[in-house]
Length: 266
Ligand code: OOG
Ligand code: NI
Image 1 (tube, rainbow, N blue to C red):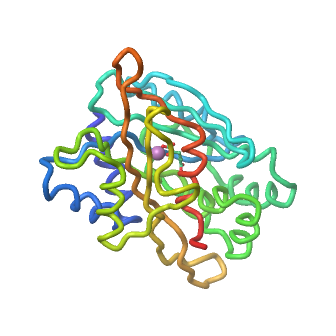
Image 2: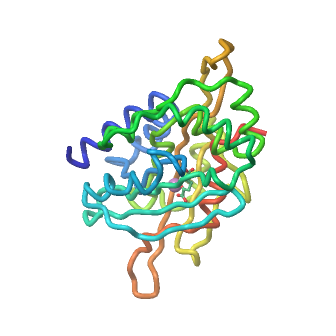
């Protein structure tokens, strides 16, 4: 599978869960020939057959190279980013919930489901495979949510892209992130305002913003249906470093807030 086919599969899975993504893309297709994506992101559970270290060889099999790792100790997450030698191929940001750091109660909930994962050789299809366990009960989802919104999201949604990221650098008619966010808000989408709508500054070499995730109805194990956050769209503008090279990395302080795009709207 080439990277174009890979990202097509990801996009189809993603827009199915977040119809807003196609609408947001259309907002920028009006006056741009195409919308280029900067990166996508995945989430997983540590200490399972789907742990980050087991996904890395698949990412590397597509030609990606390790870029950096990140720690989010308050959220009990770690993450790695990967960059492709072809600059037109989106970067990949992959995080995992450090389940061993959670309370016994949360660990037991996660274990009840992740023990259903069938251990098998992984292929690229894992990145749109969703849950490898039964739909949780709403009570387990909510109990886990109290300690980790990320954990609850992952328990309900499974392994799949949680956002694509529009590259503002590649837009023809708009070049500031605030203009991008205005257009998105004017079209009626809710924007993540954690720490301000724009995360990062030109001196961080990366400015980012995002929508709040779409909500979709899921039938929980107990038969009840609830609307829960699914996936969101991000916007990124990169700046050149002192040598004139456009910064390609991530900024942990920004990422920490972007994670909250799948939190329940307060
Ligand atoms: C990833 C959040 C971080 C970024 O660009 O810094 C991120 C996630 O929500 O899984 O996307
Ligand atoms: Ni992102």
